[in-house]
Length: 407
Image (cartoon, rainbow, N blue to C red; front, side, top):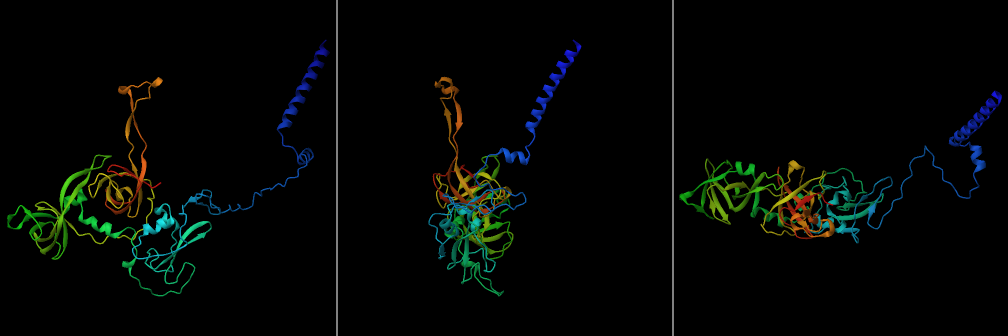
């Protein structure tokens, strides 16, 4: 009896061991010989990758939406070239860089992505009437190259002195639009309003003054002949997000020049648009604005609001000047392009209740999405505020609309 039990135990142990071996074997890789004998013959050609081989270049392709990829790009950069963009264009007087960018690009602020700087050409960042721009493709990417005086990007010249006038270079935006900026209301920041020279009194004790009057002014030691603009300090302008006072509305009064230097100095009013009053501020005439800059998107994400419009209109269109609650402290620079988004309307959802029944008193407020309304370009920057020119309006733009990085 004892021997029978031992025999049965030995048989069961052997069966268990055989099963365990089969399970272990199923997890082991097959040998090359076994694989070769087990695999059926194949007529397909197999491309085996070598571990030490260099990565293969990706094919350079141009898709229907004009997305360009270079040989080793893992994520192509979209540079939308306009259909029908000219291969060569000769710059003429009156052109602006924004206009030229619009000939080649759907999004003119991408100009730096395709602009090729040739160090062999004087002032290669500036474009002059008579220059020839060529659209070429390098490694699948579009480039705009400049030819001036028969010097192109592929020509090497020996060093020599060359001369050129910077005044003749084309502007980025229309100068006549910006020139009128000084003769219209503007935002005066708190620091300027506090420290600017002011009208102390009017000669012969007049209460108001106009063109041809003499004013006594303090806070300036400017020499005789210096010219000033007069502004009346208007309403406070608040940051709609933080509630802080950013500055004041500046109402343009007129122009004048210093006739007698001293304390106080005497200023002669040469032109007025409205009556001059005691307490009006003097702001020195601005030097010519630097308008030779490249349109580009901000390097970091920014978001702000339109806080005023120079003309004081309710609806804003092309080539109107607006002020923003963004400035140098927020990373804003001259030439930055921002998209304008019309703020979404706040409405009540009266159908959100279960069963679809109306319940006005219990309905919830819903903010509709913002939608794209146009682009602006910043042309002047202060610490807390900046001024932008509406370059393209696709729908109505209003004060308090949102501005952010172009999309």
